[in-house]
Length: 305
Picture 1 (tube, rainbow, N blue to C red):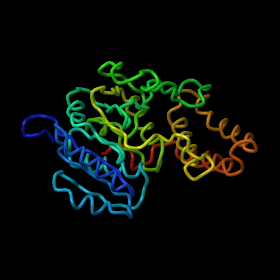
Picture 2 (picture 1 turned 135 degrees about the horizontal axis):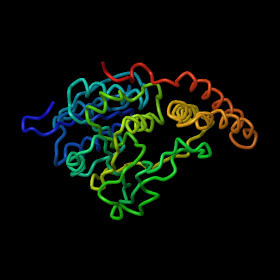
Picture 3 (picture 1 turned 45 degrees about the horizontal axis):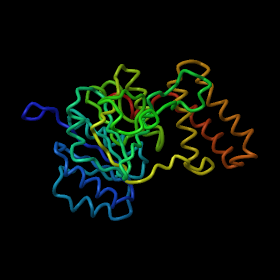
Picture 4 (picture 1 turned 45 degrees about the vertical axis):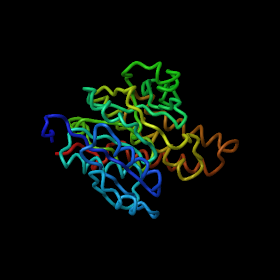
């Protein structure tokens, strides 16, 4: 759906759940863009706070609201990307509800002629906090975690970055893809619920031959601190283990890498008396069993016919 002036159109896809005040700040940031979005698709995952009032009060953005059961971030981005794709927009920009783009962020992204891009995140102090992996290793069976280096571990600050940096995984907090990419690789997989749906999508894009470039001058400000140390014995731990295992089972580049989930499961169970206890052991066993059934991409995530 090319614009009347011949330029590419862009739809922003936002997923939110019970974070109305953060969502309001994000929408303020989108309304202040020097390059206005052509559509803003907001997927509300059954919010019980004042999200509906926040969305209903906006008259300054081309909002399209989807309200659904809480299907997690993965189910939300699946629904939003599918809706924006079906509407015919040229580029889709995926953002979470806890970031705010600087006024020139979208303009900087649209100026780059690449099929897959990410904005570069910083925190409220201006420090670089872009966690996208520069090296996402699915080849070495000895790499316990595939992320070997990230933008913010390679570069001290934004000023030290080149204008474009190739990355190998993404977060759905500023990822942009052109329409033909989605036509080729499909949609985010709603079966993930939370965690690793974005990393798995980036692997699919790269396997299809698309580079993913981080755009230094596309500034995205994260409103919350990163909390990467989730409780592996709690409910989130199940999804973290399972979805990490799914990435290895689907995309491991050799048999030993595809064997890693089994070895991690065994190690966690054996070490459970001195670390996460029975709860973590139960989580990892359930995760491994569930991951086996997710070796193949779910049908809703497959490319559109």
